[in-house]
Image (cartoon, rainbow, N blue to C red):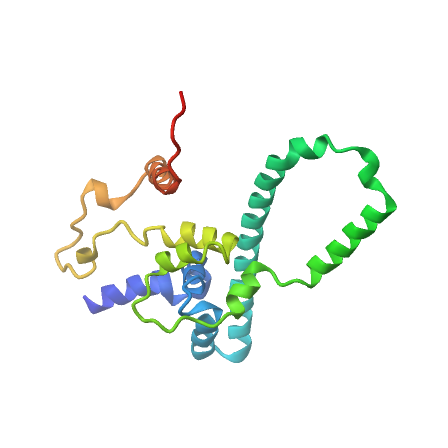
Length: 204
């Protein structure tokens, strides 16, 4: 039984290259651990060079994911103001406005991203922290990263019953727990989004 459990562990956790990177990102999005914990674990598990390469791999995935969320929110924001922008006169293209835009872009380059600010802030010391509640309370401070956390931390880790891991008589899974079809998973995600959306009164 121990060998079977070890083989299952090695299948999903034994090799870093086979590891689902979202599991590592979920640890980073835990305000009690962040990237410091991942760095600590990698330094204990691998030599200096391998640990650094794997940490860079995690950081790259995290940054690309953040950029995707940032771009999607920026597009939504631009759509909201698109009508007003199209009605502006060409007088805004003066030399002064171009200079102001240039200075603003330079300032944005020097600014730290929301993700960098989150990672640099101190970790939470509370052991029994409600992570989703923490992110909900911090949504104004980290609007983009909080959306990442909401989506990633709400993903069920497994649909397999926990007792199947320790069962010596073989699998005890029924057709419901063995898998979730993509359409069902999508329905769960959409339902959660509808539930969390603020209610709006219908006007007749």
